[in-house]
Length: 362
Ligand SMILES: Cc1cc2nc3c(=O)[nH]c(=O)nc-3n(C[C@H](O)[C@H](O)[C@H](O)COP(=O)(O)OP(=O)(O)OC[C@H]3O[C@@H](n4cnc5c(N)ncnc54)[C@H](O)[C@@H]3O)c2cc1C
Image (cartoon, helix red, strand yellow):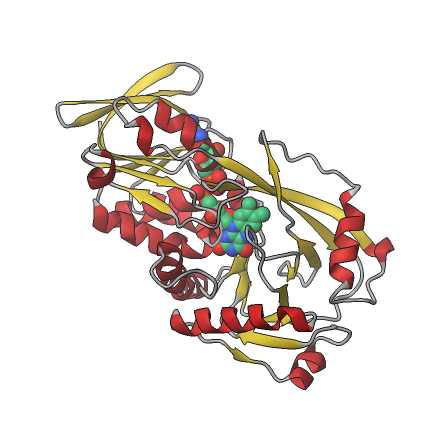
């Protein structure tokens, strides 16, 4: 018997569990893998976004803007490796200028710090970059995600919560105000809980089908949008994150860094049917052609396949971007159940703010 069960130990489940255990609720996180944060949470760009791109009324905007401040504060407090690199969004040719203007307008509308960049300044810090005009976002940066996950786990345990690894959620039903949750490690067992939170990422659709009486018409279908990264073995001439203008389903193949200064490119977007992190090395040509648009001096021999991640989308390839879906009783009719779906980018940045939102909803 516990107060709350959180399904999924990615950055979203952990941030929620941290917030709830901090507020005195007895909290158990169920994570099917051997380690927390091992799925989408560690297969991303690690970028702390500023909240520029999304419509003002989206949760994505509100939670990203708030999450940006919270995650920098948290990283400082917990001594998590992070760096505010700052980011340039570039138009590589004249036809992209109107898109750049739209991004600037949206960023300003969202009250995000963003301005037109001085081209000489861009080149001073990023020699060899080919572009027409650029925007500058000073509050974009990078965080060491494994260190972030460890800090969240430490907090949960400090506040008396439990992270149960190698423990799969099987199904849940509600009886007399309590959820009975079936889980399995080596055998199956039951936990009773007053509150239940679903943040099982790419498995969300399957999880929901195993929650008794969850209305079928409130389940978003999951679409898997794979993104690949290539690392660059040479020294980086760039000092800032560099993003081309955004596409429909991603922010484009950008220049990012790990915190040791290593440079990488990605992610692209490829809708796939199943979760498979295999790497098609033939993608290299596509990457070289895209990167050459803004960095003609790239040496193809230094570009090597790195890793892939899969975005848990709730939009079809043909649809435009949807907001995060965070449903509570008013949406699905089940009291004390919170359901999170479509927590794609900027989910990492928004995670601490999502924790606070879910606590308030409960
Ligand atoms: C390519 C790519 C790039 C991205 N770049 C950025 C970025 O730069 N900045 C940013 O802010 N965001 C970025 N994101 C988004 C960010 O990574 C996600 O929003 C975030 O990691 C989602 O976390 P999560 O906890 O919801 O999911 P996950 O990390 O997938 O966690 C879900 C957990 O649930 C567990 N689980 C599933 N089913 C069960 C079950 N039945 N029982 C028990 N456990 C279960 C899984 O094992 C998993 O650990 C990116 C995403 C991708 C794919």
